Length: 385
Image (cartoon, rainbow, N blue to C red; front, top):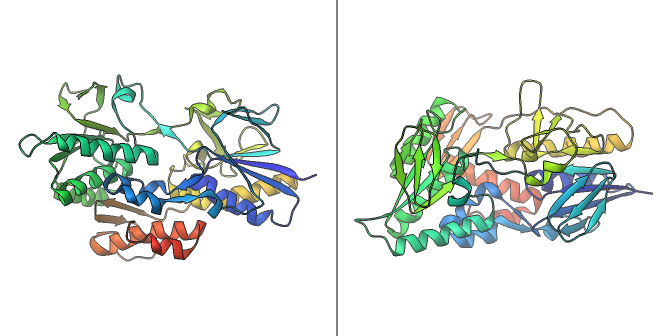
């Protein structure tokens, strides 16, 4: 009787893992079931493009049926519980799925850090619907604003997501002459905390050229209907507030009997959790390589997929698990039509912008789309990316 393998999530981690599992088990008696809330994969690191151009959604959403093999069973639904003792997954519609091995790739949700009013008064950028809603809100606010009294948009969190979101909003305002001002706020001393000072300076320069105001070194302590307050006692009024300041694990994981922290499942670089039948990959996990936790990035999820698929196979075969070595491929970030790249392997320049960085940013997205579908589809999306 074949083994039942269930993959939860269709983000970068789940999508790449399904394809790796399909390749490894194509000639073995094994049943692969793939579960996600949506019947498409979202190219999440390009979802900010939809804020400026809603039609971009057609290029960055890939139907599941274009990705999976016909032998893989896809079930659309929201995961409610994972009963590890019984090895059963329950969905929101009452469907129950038994497994021999489950791979948790549910991604993450926005962290609010207990800041008063934040979850009630801020938009997020974690889904296609989020981006479309922000676009509509921007239009509505611009319609009632003027050059003398522009609509004020505040983006909280100056990591990759916050910077790219702010950049798209500023580009939309510039292209269409919309009366919108943008402020980017960051609790830490500088934007892109944890990155090199060269990258921070280059990105800041691009943000300033896009007329984006930057406030740093002052954590938000409260969010009201049209105002955010800071630890310094200062406050900023807004017409639209977007929060991108951090991630945490899904609420779904709260009741799961497995080692975790802030609902993110703990594992080493074999991706096996405290339960031998449960593996984790991507943002859903805290993957520790001995020196610390691997950053929750798309590139880490892509790289890890083959190892986790191999280790599920080795678990079935009773073989020792292999470890994964993360390799940082650098950072590429867009600010509207501009871009900055840093620490890209084999390139002689550490930090660069302009046209080469723009092309590299497009290439990263196109390569991913090609890897899960075809180069024809990827190249057809080139103009939008």
